[in-house]
Length: 151
Image (cartoon, rainbow, N blue to C red; front, side, top):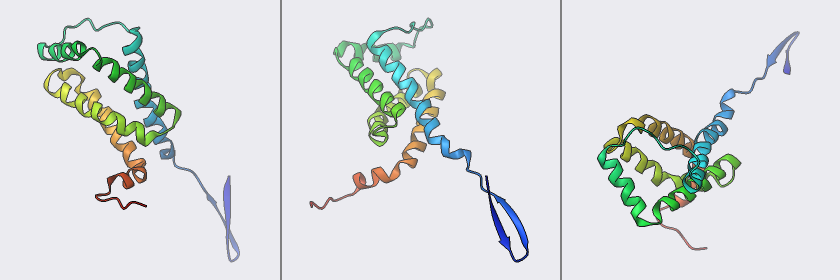
């Protein structure tokens, strides 16, 4: 598929190609959404095997505190499941990214201070999320206004 451009007596064919980068937001949504969907579902149904390597004491204490609340792990799992479903279905993506942002920040801090082996994955997820926020930035602009004038 090309376009023909005529300049005077010569004819030049110009090929119009679409950049592959147009697919990057969709790839980013799937790369982030699928793991969130699966881990959220696992948090509710417990179908993935538990890690065999022991976690550091601080990480174990943190997870133990979340379990002790009686609701926090379930809330995190439901949030991950919903966010994953929204990202995979390409529905309410800016809302999904806003909902998961605190979890991502906590994940980076958890892996920085308590369990460093997961830090590379947390940083990759955070980078993809920031890139997606950049793609959907116009949706965030009205939310980031210092003063809202009532209509």
